[in-house]
Length: 396
Image (cartoon, rainbow, N blue to C red; front, side):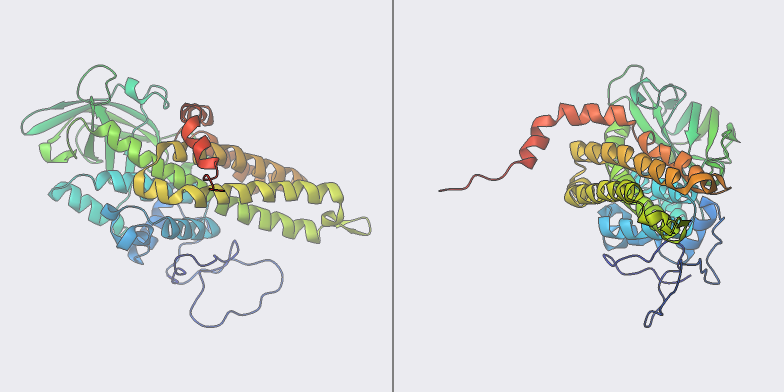
């Protein structure tokens, strides 16, 4: 597989191969997809892309020093997500993003042979890992989840149902958030690593063509009995660990949102500049240029916010900052894609066209916390965020 660019370097336009060594060659016209001999085609599923990236050793670049336990490297994560988005589909990028930003870091809070084997196989691309937090209850109300785990001295038993889980149909294991005590207290929840082939596990795909490539599905857990070594981390730390790492997932969403909007805007601008209209092109129309420019400003704002808060979220799991990023991405990405879809006209309804991408991108306002929920978090932390906007006092 072609080599990924170093951290912090500009990524190539949508559809181009990752840059090889040596001087760049001039290009004319729109960038055309180029795939190396070991690179999956543009239509590859999330699992296929993950396997290829793992084999090539690219997944570890998302972490500081290449070690998931040292935390996410924002530049490495941004480079990796942008490279995936430029080459493969929205579902494939979602599949990778959830694993990189949340599932693997949560798994890494545990230890022991069972956890280490899963961590190793997932990082080298031999397996995919599904983060099974969302329950049959509202996804924004995790303390109401009904999946239960009975923790004994040497064994655990898991019963429940998880819905709309990314990587369900391709996962080797599920990282299941379950309650070990009744009630809503934050210390009543624990992570359990459940192998897909364990007795009592039933998987079925979700009824969604939009996210089939991400392995979206539902999983039923019917009295799944496992050795106690399948407990990930300490009993009772499930929600605190989730809260810390969902912050990083929200950062990942903002970083990916910038990359997605950038390549859709680039494709849209190319079309507008080459679509004849009267004596010029669509790009020569003032109202078209203004709509496009407004989108470009919104993406610049999202990138600036991500750059401002990335260190705090990646290193300190700053929840208010992560909520602000999630709210911004949830508003910006759907807006930009809806505007671009309008500018594409009827051609946007082609299979795999901008209208399909627009529908998939609605996930930015839902997955990882609905926009309305994270805005409540922003409001709860208004004083902290207002202080950050202020200038330091200057002695006259």
